[in-house]
Amino acid sequence: MVSTARTIIAGFNFSEQWIVTAVSILVGGIFSYVVYGVVMATVSELLQHLLVISPLLIVILVHWLSSADQLSIPIPGSEPCAIH
Image (cartoon, rainbow, N blue to C red; front, side, top):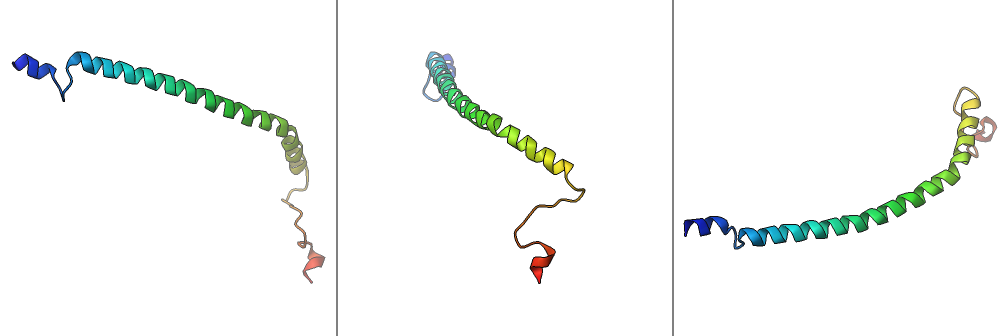
């Protein structure tokens, strides 16, 4: 009676707990595999867009670094003559 009480925990005996654990690990593994595929497809699309845009970003960065010492962003109406 005491050994039976020890093996039954919250209404499950040891063999039922093992089956529930194995099924939940299997379902979690399948779910993570599906989610992994979706995440990798999204990341791959984003990296393709970055690969297409990167030459333009490099040209802008080189132009900005090779320009004057101070940061000058052309904003319409910000010229000294446009204030007065």
